[in-house]
Amino acid sequence: MTIREFSALVQKYQGLVYTVCHQLVPDGEEAQDLAQETFLAAWRAIDRCPAGYEKQWLARIAANKAKDYLRSGWARRMDTPGDEVLALAGAPPGDGPEARALDTLGAEALEGLILNLREPYRTPCRLCWLEQHSVREAAALCGRPEKTVSAQLTRARRMLQEQILTMERGNGDGAVSGGWLSDRRGSGRPDS
Amino acid sequence: MELFREDGCLTDEGLDALIHNQLDELGRLEAAEHLSYCDRCLDRYTARLTGETLEQPPRGMSRPVLQTIWVRVMQNFYGRAAVAGVAALLALTIWGSGAFRLALSRGHSLEQTRPSSGATPPAPQMVEPDRPGHLYDKLFEAWGALFTTDETNTTR
Image (cartoon, rainbow over all chains, first blue to last red; front, side, top):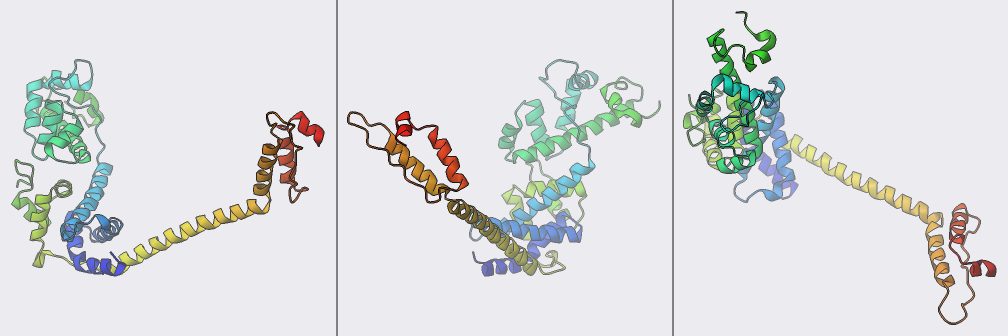
């Protein structure tokens, strides 16, 4: 594709690409930058563009750019939990936080929490944590990229952690209090 | 509002919410992740981006994009030209120092001084370097002398 042809492509689809970027990233300036990056990436990979599918191809690149932007922003704000949470049924016995979580909540309750997660988290969590598939296997089984599954598992861990903390707070000094989550909460622990 | 269906795809109301900027940051991230790999949902989404829902960028994109492409093409071109120029300069410098010719001549002379089986060995013929007084030549001579036979040395 010549520069002139590519210029025509930019003219034709700049509205679409900007719209995708702006709907996913509300900041107008960022959306404009992402849209430009989309076209630059498209130019670099123009040979791989399937003929007749330029619209979808550009929208896919724009969604990818927006996803990377949102994901990095999300990761910056959230302190990513480690592996402290929730290996479930079939987890090896030990003194680790997983074992303590199992002791505290019980495997069934924890399994219930996982199965009550909403999509898009439930399927990869079920595959990885309940059915003991690797991330790669889970990605293949649910037809998602491996990186996406990893990111979803990380966010699901956080969601479950927050749910368990909420349950713990709700129980006050009850059975759950004093468990591994209380230790991790540190100064955030409510006085009781 | 449910953003995802049970089969993991985006719901119609989820797509509408995305188009009308009604999703929070996590929702937008989840939608972007899904659109980056799901062909069906991408088709459904782009099919909705018509008419009023299609925005125009505040500034035209064609010019800055093409400028950036042009700059990168030029950087690439000049970068390669600079590397080629430095390589050529280095080659010319080494050539001008006589190192190539000396190395070739040393190789030739060693071939000649190798003792042949049977008959009387021919008298070694040292090929004189073009610039015998040059530092490189002296270094090569000294190095080559370490590997020459006694016979060769005596004939010299």
